[in-house]
Amino acid sequence: MKIENFNFLKKHLQNLAKYKPEFKTKIEKILKILLQEKLENLTNRKSKVHLSASAVVFKKEKCYFIKHPYLKTILLPAGHVEKDEIPLDTAIREFYEETGLFAKIDENMQNFGLIDVNVIEIPENPVKSEGEHIHIDFRYKLVLDEKKKRREAELEWFLLMENEADDEFKKYYKYLIY
Image (cartoon, rainbow, N blue to C red; front, side):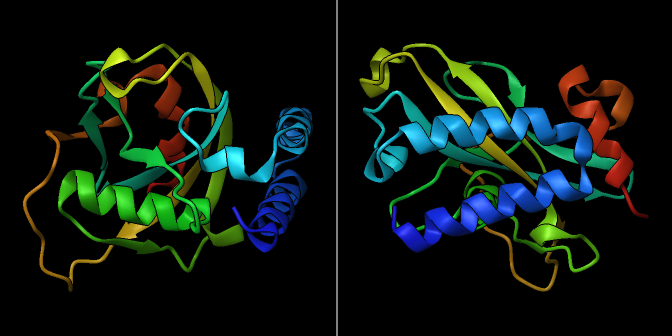
C-alpha cells in the first residue's frame, strides 16, 4: 500500500468519527492497529491484518448479499484490498465481481459513502493457505449503476429485506432511499 493511500485511509476514518461520534472509540482502536502494521502487510494475505471492503447496495427496499464460498454464510459483497487500491475501489470492484452488477459512489452520502468500519476475526482457511487473521473492513453505501451491462456473477447473491438480514446488517437499512 502506498503511503498516500494510507494517509487517505487515516483521514477517511477521522472523517467518519466526525460525523459518527459514536464510532470514535472503535476508530481509535482501528487506527492503533493500522499504525502498528507495516504498510505492505495491509494488502498481504499472509499477514495478520488485512484490509477489506464491503458494499452496501440496495434495490428498492432490499439489500444485496452473497453466500460466502468458504464460510458458507450470508454476507455483504466484499473482499481484500489489493496492492494499489483504496477500500472504496475494492467495494466497487468486489460488488461487480461477486454479483455481476455495477455500483458507484452515492453522491448523496458524506465521506464517499463510508458508513462503518469493523474489525472481523477470520478463521484459518487451508484452501487458500491463509492463517487466522483479522480484517479491518470498510463498509460503503453505494448505488446501483444500472446503465452498465451486467455480467455473470461469481457467487450466488440474494436481495434481502431488513427483517430477513442478519442482525449485524440491519443497521444499514437506515440508509435505504426509495
